[in-house]
Amino acid sequence: MINWSLIADIVSLVFILPGAFMVFSAAVGVVRFRSTLARVHAITKPQTTGLLLMMVGTIIRLVGSEDFGIHERGDVGMMILLVLFALMTNPVTGQRLGRISRLEGLYGTEKDLTVNNAPAAYHPGRVETHTPKKADKPQG
Image (tube, rainbow, N blue to C red; front, side, top):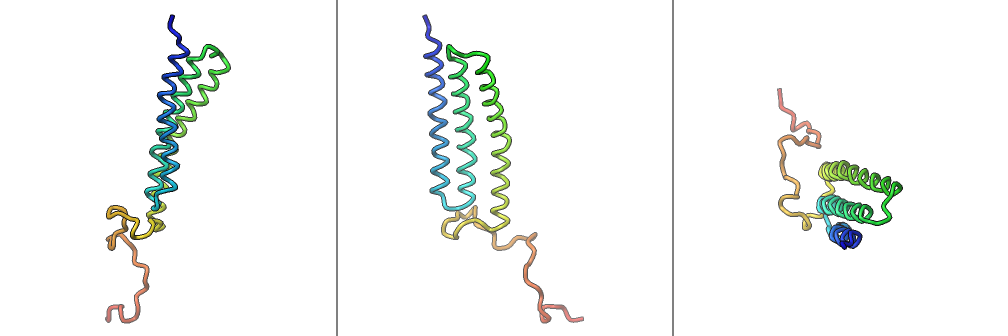
């Protein structure tokens, strides 16, 4: 006879352990990375994937349990909603944080930035911040 509860436990463990590792690595990345953009990347990518893996493992564990009944179906529905909302909001939050950090100049120190993350010295769309002096005005 096949023990479905044991199979569900093993399969759920296969999902939960990598998910927990990814969530942990996101937390370590936030602490260790120095620049804002690296921290945003560290918190959005593995955090979302880790949450998804952990919720899938938990749903498999709940559904595979011998005691799965009508009350646990509501729990599964809440977990599915949690995953859907996380998938909708985490990428948007990461994009907004990255854009605000670029606009506000919250890159980090110059030595921490790579060539791709460093701000450009000149951009044609950039507005100059100094006011022209009398000598700068054209004569006419």
